[in-house]
Length: 284
Image 1 (cartoon, rainbow, N blue to C red):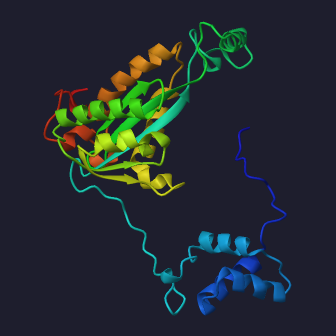
Image 2: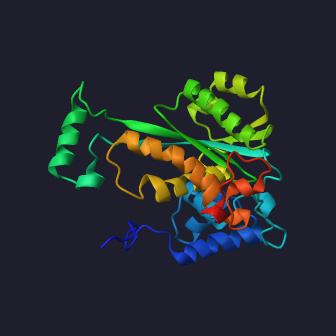
Image 3: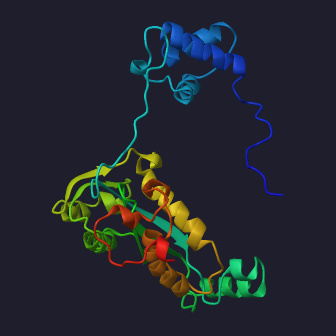
């Protein structure tokens, strides 16, 4: 039976009554994490300043400006909303394991003869089955959710620059001729000087997300989850080339056939004036 990996018990977990003290003192007295740790020690609870600070973050009261004089939290989370096509384009890379010719363990089962043969071929320096990963570069328009994905061998800056130009041409064919803000994470390919100089001629602003905060690039992160659930792991593939061909078909299926909640249960291409094919969900 598959279950959550969370432990049944956590003996070192901070007791609930101590957490209540931390929250109460923070809201009432506006004490810092260090002051709260000192006061807890005075009443017999030994907690480090770092532990108290982590609890303040978890409770959402770590920043003083988010607390009113009454102790109430005035923090209002904002939404990242694109107002028109091209306003925000999100880029990201998903690394997936390479499928050996003949299929991997998903096709034959773990420990099967075919699985062991594939592993032996990967171990050979000049084996027919190439070990490693492939990289799926994706671009998503934040307004329409129009998406473009390519199956590429690496995630270097040079490869990313080539993908950016092809994705820009794909968006231009759909009427998105101007990209105002390009949103990426802090990967080395996006921080490279060559990439920054290249996109500066086509993008008004390059915005990198806060480190370890993937939700700030959530539109492309969610798209990659859909890609994994509905394509990458939805069936058994017998080779990497077969899956690469399917990704090209996926670009059409996702943009023209698959209903999307944001587009009113219609394909993303319906939110744009220009299309490259007239086949929509109503014609399938």
